[in-house]
Image (cartoon, rainbow over all chains, first blue to last red; front, side, top):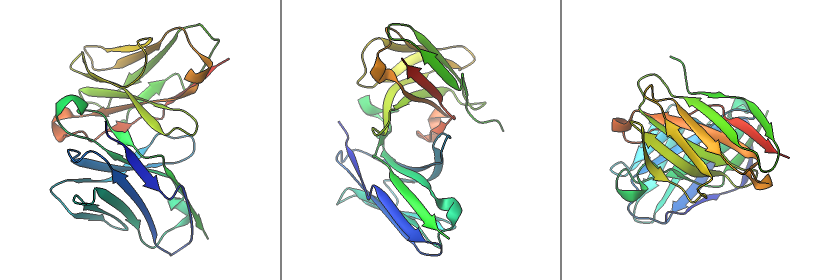
Length: 115
Length: 113
């Protein structure tokens, strides 16, 4: 089955710096890649996603890039703010076949933004 | 628009008992997904229900089961509870034709003593 590796496990940056989190996936059939932000005591919040027919997607300070050949995708946060501090999860899924509906998650990255 | 809701917020059971967790999806969403988030293990896919049918299942024993009701709300049942079942159980919903964008609820914290 699909396996998603996420790095780094912890990331500490100064306010205003950029943060990059990287994920690799194993199943070349994966075609949907969401990113979630989870704050303490809350459920994961979908912040951005990308599909396999797109190489990059931006939403204000957040961007995601996808390299299908290398089977990796990354989350980029620019001009980080203290409220960006949270656990970030990447995930991969196949929108079809026997794995349909299942998101396979990375292990998470604890991002801390210091004021 | 109301998000995904889950009840109860916290649930404490003893080993061997049964637990029932409930989820109401976002209005208009027909698919409900259940995930287990155990400490240090990330999120693991449990079950997917759509239009009242179980569509997919993760690598969990049969004592994890559930159902989806005609109003698309869902129940997760865990029988013969074990200590390692202690975790945050998250429910997500999606409008299936949008291609798997899943929106999560706040979760139910299950503690097995």
